[in-house]
Image 1 (cartoon, rainbow, N blue to C red):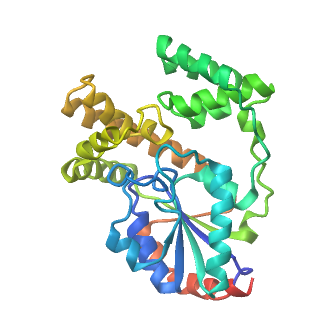
Image 2 (tube, rainbow, N blue to C red):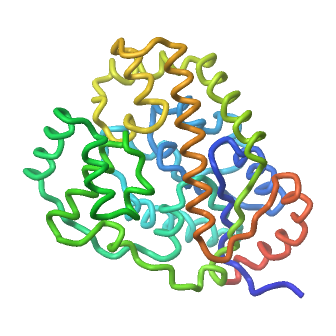
Image 3 (cartoon, rainbow, N blue to C red):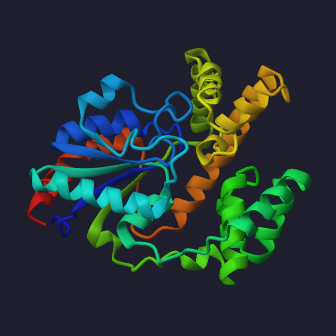
Length: 311
């Protein structure tokens, strides 16, 4: 007996697990269009370092929320939820299924459950925190965040100065941790979305990560970042603080050799993948699949997705 119909199918998982290839195959199987759920792939010009699908892959199946912002334009989880809901309604109005694919769990939660309103904007405080970070390092700010909002600190890498500063800005200006502003899971996610998380053995995943980084370098990742800086993009921009981009910027500034940079990107990407898996393990109603196993279940998914347009 089939479960209740699902308006959406989410194919999530850690970086380099194989989401792109599988999602393209699945989308063709079930006549679906794809909504990107990757917080970096939404930006133009950030192609190699974000492992963005190639132009041919983007043309094979309609994709939404890819290349919709420039790196200097603000975009957050609330923006994603709004844009993704518009895209989903458009897709379903044409009788197609919706696949949300990516690795940014917060964005998926925002889409499904919404976010509580969270302003806390305080430019003067933000400037003070940036100056403090420049003088004492982001690690010291992250330690402060861990003391007052361990949930947020556990999700934010110590080197992600943009998100660390934003979390502290909200904390000090509102008196409430940023993690407390996120709308809690209503518990009805399974009725709204068939959540699939792809998994591989740790050794296999780490090998794929290492190989992906090598391929990025071969494809011209350094030149991509050099070009972003030449366009006037500040290294302090949120997307350029992400893994890979900030490392290449440090290399271009002479802080590390290329070999050291490659090692650090691989190391931090593996750590990021571990944090992604930790996030997904805390989620409710998750269906865990190895990529090959998921395709074996495509007939069942096709039957479920075929009923999406009627939901």
